[in-house]
Image (cartoon, helix red, strand yellow):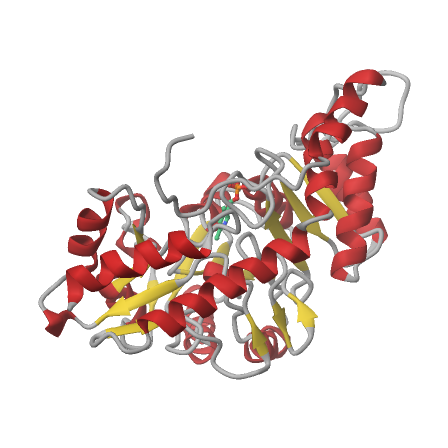
Length: 378
Ligand SMILES: *Cc1c(COP(=O)(O)O)cnc(C)c1O
């Protein structure tokens, strides 16, 4: 590849190809097999959820099957964090259900529990029934305030589907993200913490639930000698070839998480004295983000917008990206109800920028990026 500095590239550890070759040698070139079993076992051990992780074709597929498992159907409402990537919300539409968007709180930039509570009360008042599920997101790897969100979930008796696509390796109170909700979705897309070239996984509440997810993910075929279907199925299982990459990546997962945290540390140190810049931080020691992407806010009074900085850095072959544009601001979700505590997510979208953060980057890459930012802002 070229010498440009990218946001988040795949980062191979070295053993991946061995497991891919194993798949070819044994002719397990299908969407199941020993690499899939091993990848699930390694993920289950890593997350402290043995026997409860199902490897799937994408994080989006994991979120979709999470909704299927929670019984979300046409006409139901599902509450989703507005400040996220569209893949958090699209599966709600796949089920014919209706997304209800909730805004963020200032510390973690994730779902505000107070707004969630008020939102649910309002939906019950308007529709006479409760939303079917709640989807909080650990955006950029920062854990959402799960204790507060789970308290609301318990009080209303509404299950949680955690979108941990960006948060593999992140911890809250010593517990891994992806294991707080009834279900938790992970992504192994090319730009995530680890990659299987494309893939995802669903963390389930029990081994029985995991078996049921595998059933749905393989066309919901009943156990009979002929093909027989009682419910709608999906073709969402992970390929054994891709899972081979995943098995290799698990060897370097923790190392790569530590590298992203170190990159965040470098940015904090080098940008700490730049006027009008604030690098996003863990709000307190209970939070331990993987810092999938280091993000910063720019005070607009410095006379530069995040997009000015993005364009200036792009001209120097440095890739940055504006923060996610909230879902309630997307044309495709224009009709969806939206609840917010003062529009924090809208302000973040105006002020924020994602910085090159891949574990493959060198300290020199980060220094070059910081110098370019300083030339733009100081
Ligand atoms: C990447 C991502 C997804 C989707 O994962 P895919 O594996 O790309 O389908 C879902 N939610 C968030 C927040 C993501 O960043």
